Length: 106
DNA sequence: CGCGTGACGTATC
DNA sequence: AGATACGCCACGC
Image (cartoon, rainbow, N blue to C red):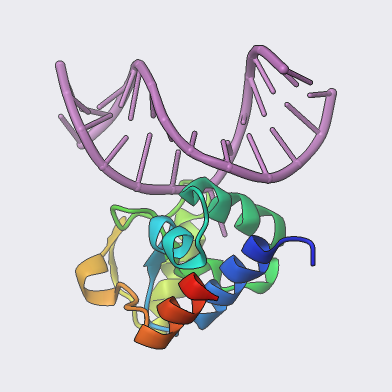
């Protein structure tokens, strides 16, 4: 195994259902990542197969270079964004109990 | 081993 | 509302 963390992050992101979004910090916490930066780094490296468009920043705004594409993809899934910001309070993915327990304890 | 860089976060001004 | 500072950790040089 290259990196458990690597696999973990990918798994978490794949677990995010359509129409929902998660923040880098959430993914990092659920995956047990030391810092949210790793989430971005992993996505930049192996995020091609993952629904990266469902990952937003802490304030509900997507990455600068992807913002345009990201918001459009999200809109197609039912996640309406106010031109720039997404309603995290409404679309924020809430992890199911077993997922976080299984992940954190392992 | 130090330094810069990065799809980040929080605090502060 | 914007910009700045610091922390955080992996990766390349």
